[in-house]
Image 1 (cartoon, rainbow, N blue to C red):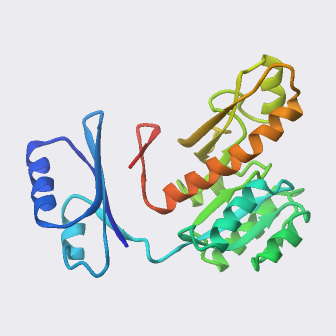
Image 2 (cartoon, rainbow, N blue to C red; image 1 turned 180 degrees about the vertical axis):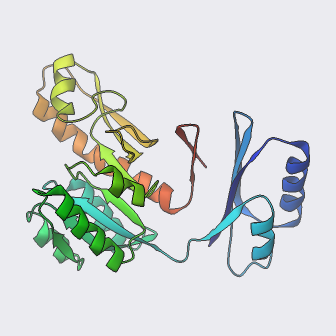
Length: 264
């Protein structure tokens, strides 16, 4: 499947050109959203469709992506497995739309799990950040990784590292951002007596947990529980949210504009 997507200022001539295109070509699942004077649009067509030559796509309003070529994905993990399992299971069932080519971790804990899926596991300690990131980047280059997923990877990435994969690193944070940024959000939420727990999947930027939000979901908590109860309730939410965000990214459904995401 090919995807045609783009963003363009709201102008009469551009809207007329877009409308003409839609009337003469059979796009599937076409959607558009207007936000702050800009039109964002996305449509799908099959490679067998003779509707649109590549030159037209490149010369006019948008660009196209071939989703039949799976993006190459690296998972970064620490010791918790729930988010990694959700993604690996989706990949094993051939529903992911991407290829998990490796898992990188600063602990050995998840090696048996990962290798059980037939995925290479790289243990890279992080005591020396510069050396560990050098090794991580080497692995990513050798495997031609395009997308990085921090599946409860409990380490910060340097600005230089993030800069090499701008808008291609997705993190899961175990709270509803912008609340409870950083470490120990379960404990912070418990101390504040929140009535909803949740998770946020976002792009990674230089600031801690400040990247553009892709997906969020919440669950209700009852008073009388503990911080551990918050954690047990939230783990399935985290896995679901991260997987949903990864799907949207791989399907080219996300635009980043004015410090936020627009999803189609």
